[in-house]
Length: 290
Ligand SMILES: [Zn+2]
Image 1 (cartoon, rainbow, N blue to C red):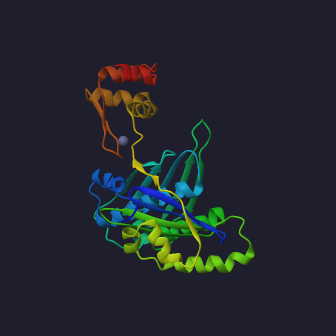
Image 2 (cartoon, protein in one colour):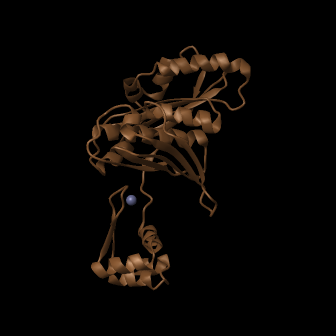
Image 3 (cartoon, helix red, strand yellow):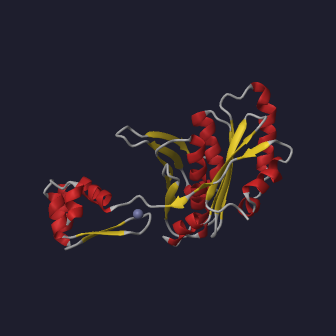
């Protein structure tokens, strides 16, 4: 049985490499409950969700991490957000009924974007590379190669029940002598089959891949689903639309309803809320007090 909804770090005792294994179950099914995703879209969204969880651990960044695919379509957008508390939310936008196929057929021209927002009023870091490769894992390996110069191997998979992934990374200060070790670990990682990733627990996976190596496996860290939307944030978003737009919308309907695209939560703003927003004095507090 795989470790449910958790991430496990591992490292090689005598080699300059480390990695992460993630298995998302209830978290992934919660993402799927929000929308009826066609199989081809579900596949990429699941792989992206597992990847974002892996990346959040590999990058060790203390802030909001957003992994995005922006593309010309039919799969137009994939967004996965991970918080430092190891909660995530995810969504995809697409046109029509995309057929399962290589990533570049599904997405057309696109970009892979990694956004790291530490909050605290600082500008977020953004890494952007053009979308390459047949699969998302390849595109991400390419991202690490080009933007971080850090050799990385990634395996990802998803079905209707679970999304899972494995990331193997060479240590930044690895010497030339370890190139051979890295090549060997890379080749072994490439032999992993999607079904094994879904069915085996982390210890069994590592035994299966690296039984001749001395591998230390750390305790599982739990992952959960959480949407970070709120009434205050929705109000702030409406406020940012600007006075004209808000006045026009308010004139057309008694109540303005905004649905969160991630979790489906509906936020309703009535005439009094809207006039509060329009008054400009609309601090977030004055809206929630109503
Ligand atoms: Zn939400």
